Amino acid sequence: MNSTHAIVFMTIKSMAQSVGGCGFLQLSARLKCVSGLNTVILAKAIKRFRVAKGITQVELGIRSGFDPKTISRYETGEYVPTIEAVYKFAEILGVPVKAFFTDFESEIEQRAFLFEVIRNADAEELKRLVDLIGKARKTPKI
Figure 1 (cartoon, rainbow, N blue to C red):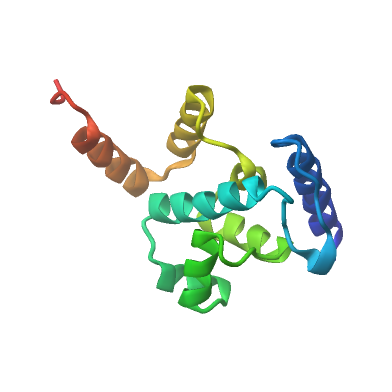
Figure 2: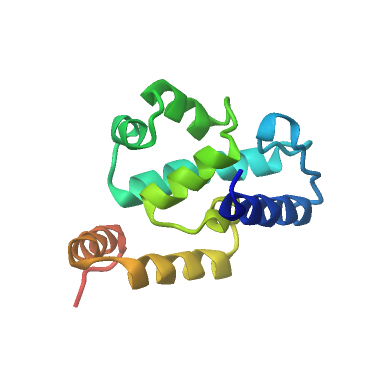
């Protein structure tokens, strides 16, 4: 594990301990939470960020070196990715590692996530986001 991975590991360990009071298990460098809360948050986040980036499980698998079935299992929580895999996903999907452990149930977290996505979007992604938001709105754009 290099120094960057060590920093990420410590950050994830700290977040895992603070979210839902769950403990962090280091066994096999796997991210696991005794209650399963972090595993669920992580699984949902992998899918959310992949879909937001507009790539398929196959494409994420190719870019990360994992079989698409493994990506599917990560997204359902059946498998828990290693810290190295989470770091790789963060790099591919263009999000900070800590975003994989944020519970997006609160309105504040949802707004912060959207602002971050918009702020980091390139021109093509921004156009796609505007189109998606326009379609999702209940009232037509003015």
